[in-house]
Image 1: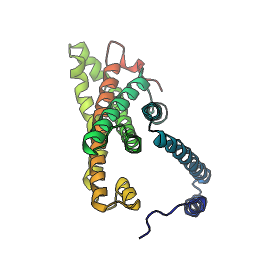
Image 2: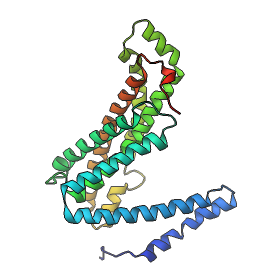
Image 3: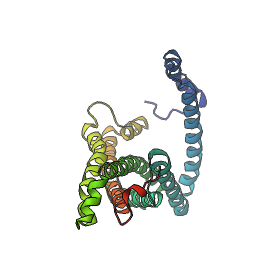
Length: 262
């Protein structure tokens, strides 16, 4: 069976024709999204093409400087996305705290998982390390966004109660603990739910990619399991760090209402 079929721009163009369904719905129902769909499609083509060219060069050289340089760039982009695009409001030091939480958690989990679960030597082998840590970054972003947003919302709504507890001698941890617990629960629920239902309805992305590449189906399933466990671990640790950082920045001697930036 032929598994290595080269795809050309004409194949991409045929697939792009399917976006006509989205555009038609937008025009028919007057959603005003036709231009947004076109821009998103063009960005998708441009960004993935540039990424492919860049990764091809990095994979060919295998230079650790390029590998970890690419990792740092992805980490900065992930922290910027969370801080400046997804967050409805910000707090002092949000970018730095988010970057440290996402980068530290994803990097440690990726190195450990590649070395001991995926049997890669060295653990930063580009062909496995960069795609893996990219997936970890993407999921960490979701958890951190939900977690920090939940903390800020909770402290804003319950500002008076938090300040009253501090006035009566409660420690900062006593004040923020229930907020941190709720934020973590909200942030981790999507990851846990996704891990629990994987394989019931659809074939997950990593496994699909391996199957399309011609890999053994059971090997693809094991690889998907490993990735999901790595995603869960990195999301939990990055969310915990960012939520704690957010809570302890906001709950201090500075009045809570002055700490937010819209």
